[in-house]
Image 1: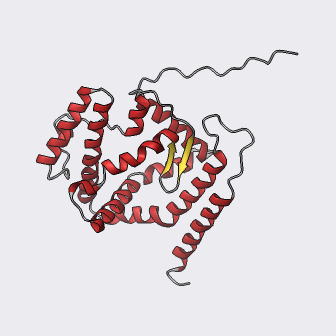
Image 2: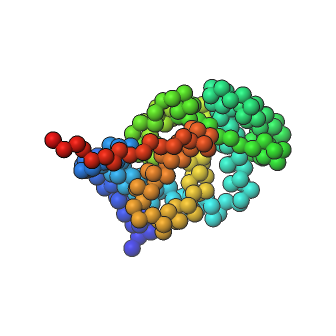
Image 3: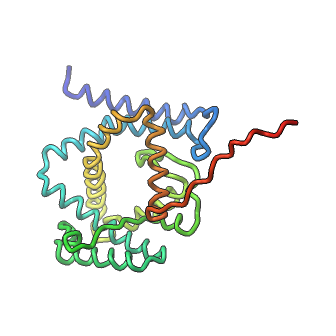
Length: 248
């Protein structure tokens, strides 16, 4: 068998999964109120999983196994520093001046003393990372999460988080530090591969623990995002209405 046969099979599997996602979005008989698009979402998750199995996870394992840890740490720190700058803006937009100041100081320290963000001096100085994004900012000011959505290649989201994602991506783009188009594309790929490599252990644990991987991911995502919007102290969820309908 030729050495290229296995990658071709994996790519073919991803294409078949995409066809299923586009053509097999049957409705679910009794959908979760937070997930009215479950038929589409399950199909899209299958497509994303196929792409991950065929391309992203193998590349991430190669990155983890063959690139020195100090290089991987530096890459993660660099992109984390870009995210921290956007987090500082979102703290300010949420009228939270203290964490906004902390994150601003963290970015300044890591940029000036940490070789442009390659070293995480801020954490050593007690300036802990407090991530925020525009989806959280919208939630802070009362916009409901809306239906759960699985985005092509990007994975779990909600209608609110999907609306905020373009601004998040623009604000943390390496274009803002003066890279040209080719360098921006390369940096984007590197960021994705590094992020996926850091999740390899969690993926294995998820496969072992979840009876229904889709439901586990959906419920975990929605619960985590709700917790983040309320800074770890969300109000109680409303009790479900279990009353019997009145007899006629």
